[in-house]
Image (cartoon, rainbow, N blue to C red; front, side, top):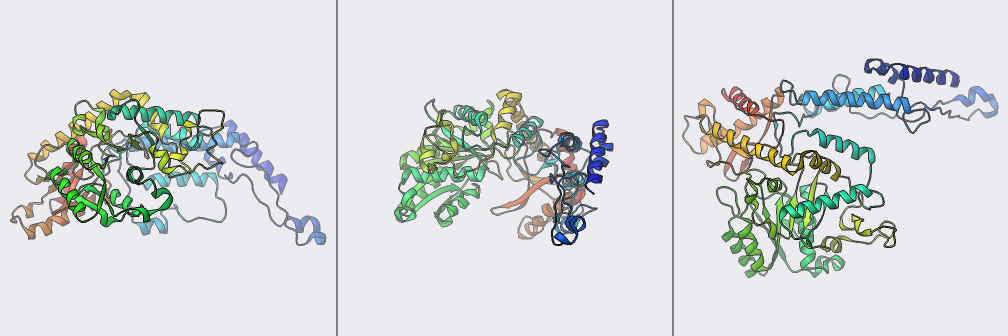
Amino acid sequence: MRKKSVHTFESTEKDVKKDTRPENLMTNLSNAYASGMNLILGAGSIFFGTLLTDLVVYLFFPLDLLPSKDGQDLTESFLLHVVDILLHYIQKTFDVKSKVLDFHHPHQLLEGLDGFSLELSDHPESLEQLLVDCTDTLKYGVKTGHPRFLNQLSSGLDVIGLAGEWLTATANANMFTYEIAPVFTVMETILLKKMYEIIGWGETEGDGLFSPGGSISNLYGILTARYKQYPEIKRKGMTVLPGIVLFVSEQGHYSVKKAAAILGIGTDNVIEVKCDERGKMIPAELEKNILQAKRKGQTPFCVTATAGSTVLGAFDPLQDVADICERHNLWMHVDAAWGGGLLLSRNHSYKLSGIERANSVTWNPHKLMGVPLQCSAILIREKGLLEACNQMQAGYLFQPDKLYNVDFDTGDKTIQCGRHVDIFKLWLMWKAKGTSGFEAQINRYMELAKYFYKVLKKKDNFKLVLDAEPEFTNVCFWYFPPRLKHIPKGFERDQELQKIAPKIKAQMLEEGTAMISYQPCGDKVNFFRMVFSNPATRQTDVDYLIDEIERLGKDL
């Protein structure tokens, strides 16, 4: 049995060397596995008779991928197949004639589709089957790089960023020490310094790190704000605190409340500040809320301003917020997860005027800048504060007597231990585009938003949520089917209008033609939110989306 199996493997290896075309390699991979070894059971009884009747002998032979012995050719063949699958998917992604998604309900995926099963087996499956699974996983997923994927703030597929992610996964480094990630930790230092400069902080200011996303970056901002005011909390806990409260725009991101829940502050102690009709925090309302909190015996410690709100794309008046924070000695955190990229545009950076006065900033390059997920930075103006807040000085990682400058051991600044390398893809993209390339890309998004707004303005069956020209790439609007245009404005019409956007989106998903989000907001019933952050999107895609909404919605 052993001889026969080894002979089969040798034949497979020869075939791999002889012909590396995908259609021939698929056959060769059908008998190969990623387990590194195969098991033959029960041989003891056959070979040793009654002497070792109960013995089960396990015979191992090299069969598969590296690091298995002689697995190099098979490994190369397998990876070339994977690359072929990915290249085919990328081509389909950028093809406007392809579907944005092949939609199926959760129960269908659970039950299995055309030989694609998500169930896990106790026994290994062949490499050929794994390649089929890779293909099907992409087939039934969403093409977030498709020109007509307009559903999320993070969208698009940047090929340079993709190459960076491949390299990162291959290196499989951990960002906690220079020792284990020497190049990546220095890259992070360089890029963070670049971001401090763009914000407008001085040479001696600025600290930060890359985190798993904007919600975690906002958590860091609030955590550091609390530590700055009450450093004893690190040792003694919440019992040493007065009744602290923080403030955020009513249009602010839900992660601020989530951070308050996680940190033990409590969601009831997050005070939402009223906004104007454009979704901007009203400074007078902020000051009024602060004074009211003080009169109640509460202790304000932090204000979170928003630079680019999720739904309306609003920018809070940062200069006014900074004045109030200085007057009341409050930490100013700016959630610029969505809008931070505008700092790279000389035409639009004025919308974030005052951000240089913030104590901390969240900025997500995986949104407007188009870096593949995930890539989010928390930036703290005061050096050393992030480390003082989070460090635990674990002796098995952060020894002070290493042979290099341990300032590059960033792990003690974080609330994580293991930290993914999010920096390389951004660094590589910045190399490829330059700051001017990001600027041109962002300016084009703004032009598309302006174009979309102007087209909708002229159409009788569309109504803009905000009548003024968009401040950002968010454009919010309703579609009115013909039957609703004759119903007077009021409760009855709103009840019907509430159902329109969900029905149109449902049909879009089922047909796979486009993806755009919808939501209610305050007293406004469901409306569509168009966002531009996908470099593949063109004016023709904008025109297509308008026509598609009309096609799907005219008879509703």
